[in-house]
Length: 159
Image (cartoon, rainbow, N blue to C red; front, side, top):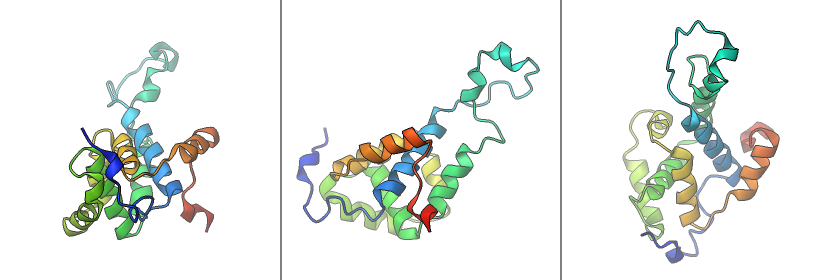
């Protein structure tokens, strides 16, 4: 069991990604993870016949994955590495006191598209939130705002 009480004081809250941006990525990741694969792409039934189940199916024209990929891909490389390190922490690869090591490892192992790597992680939103919580970062307020307003806006959206 992980012990998040051993957070170093200079690390707490200093993850290199704003809480608003992190909450946005988490909400998009959860929306993407909630989707099921397309069960019948050639279905010819009327939408009223499927009891709205198709809403949860990922479609080829569904923007959720694209929005998540863009949200991650538009971040500077150091912030992308921070997301990878948080996800690794959330899945138990590193402890809170190993934050600097996790971050350095994420930077060293960077190869290819970070967004694709992260999107391939099941339960990415939960992993990111757990990693942040281990460092003493609570995203409850930002996530609540995002749910109330449809989506948390990234800091860059205000520029």
